[in-house]
Length: 326
Image (cartoon, rainbow, N blue to C red; front, side, top):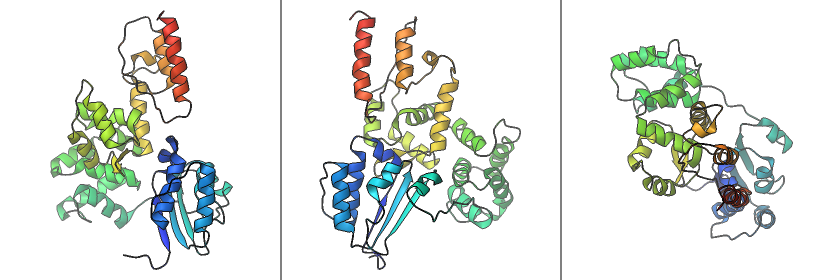
């Protein structure tokens, strides 16, 4: 359906993740121009992109939505003040309200928790696929809502966890939330993870530590070459349980779930990274390979989206050659 209010619209999802890759901001600028004006755009630098956007969109009334912004430079390079035509609207989602104020944005809306019918509706879609629970599940559903505390992620995860289970199983699962050493969202996140089969847990941890924001096909290609073969079914199960999503072909995961996964790995050995199942910090990898006195085999995945990682990796490998006399 054509947009009758705006001359063009664009939704840029996961700005934080997408801007981290090499040339990420430039690709976002190209996507913005493509969505509004059509055609293919080839931008060679961020500064060039700024100039093109200001020139081509300064007289257009547009709607731009920037999702998950976490740095001021993202706003400065994608939606500067006065870039767009009169009546344009820019909507930004972020966890940092101070960032918005620094950009001169005064109209800030804090997302509220969901209660009452709205919470029940979101929960029911995850648990039953409808906007309300069957009558004989209503009391159990209301009990689940109390645990979720109005947090959308909690409502979705808990509903997915309870889906297709009978009332006795619901009762057992909800009873298990009593007396746990977690509160609120932490409890629901941990329970969702604990309910996964071991192979699913391992794949979840791989995504949290290494693959968030990466292309699904790329991840499957890497995983299928490892010892523990993981089929596409694992991705489908994690999607069904609302623990990951696929956005434009990339695997996405909520920040809280990413933190849960990394915390689980860290707790395997808080003081000795050499005893953890996964390493994702360059410094931890270097420490383990230079200081370890035991024979350990690692699969090390470097995040090549960081600007200095290739340089660090080159220097690191040179150090290893010297250290082992290679």
